[in-house]
Length: 337
Image (tube, rainbow, N blue to C red):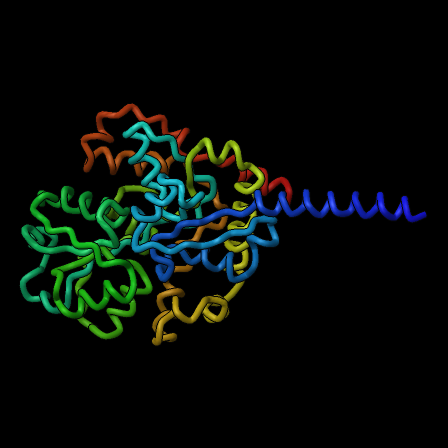
């Protein structure tokens, strides 16, 4: 009898050890460029709801100033996955880097080109931004890409602009209120919070709704997604599927709850002091969140078309868009649900 118990003990210890190793293998470091931005809310909310753990993935969220900084973390090996804008995968494909998005949570980008209240009198249109200082989350981020695109589209040389990294939250609002920059590419809740204090806030370009996105880009333009190196995806399919399942479950939860209920789940430090304005911004943002998690091939094509206009490198490169995203894990989740 003692021998049997001893053997059972050894077997149990081996099982616990293998389970521990499996759990260790499922740990993922997720880099996010500005967690307070509502564009990234599904990523943070999934963590708050415990959806990653339910899906069998131990996710550590690491925050950065902007999407380009989060991307650097993945390219440098200090993070595994980026929660950021899909357009980075297209931009890097032009440089021979193979990154893929595997679940999309934003149907459109949510960018707004906003004039600092201190400079309202001198800036009446996008053309007036020539030789001005314009804030972006961080140089090389999607906000920077959008700035270059919208300037070029309106006949302004992007090289004539002083691009300043100001983040996406309180630091961006402070720079705008103080007038240290002339304008900025902003996202909610920062836009709504700034508007709450400045009723005459001037917005020169807006992509916070489907209608406005179509007007600016001429079609659908996907925003936030989870993406990483294609070889990491291939070697970590369990983790990728788990994270996909978690985001899809969170998107379903978002579309079945009120802005007030969603806000109640978010960390107070991401909401800020003005809760009513945060909820107002969230109410306006809800239509932006995907209901399917799928990448629309037409949306990916729109990103390529936009980048081809503002980036000579992208225009010259022969990019295979099918390698910049995959719907495999979203489709697998659909079959399993």
